[in-house]
Image (cartoon, rainbow, N blue to C red):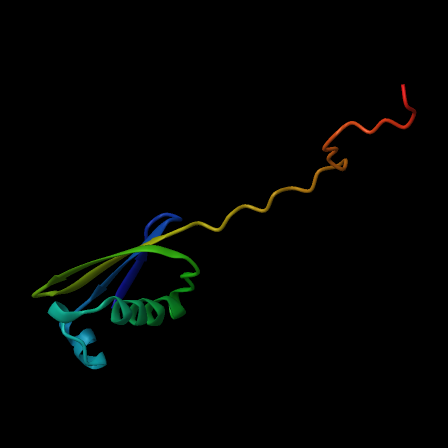
Length: 95
């Protein structure tokens, strides 16, 4: 199995028929659950995080299977405002 990150938003995994046979899978009958299992196994040593996969594309062939995983990037933390936000004007003395 060969995994390659594609920018910050994805990864490509190529599995040969021998890799699939070691797991008991066939290239023409690979399901989404089996593809996720292969992705998790391939990502462990490479350090890629599969925290939010939005789409999987599976391309079977006689030479193996190519799997593209599109990842949703982690949302950026919103900075804490320096002053508390005021939702409406507060009047201390009636007019």
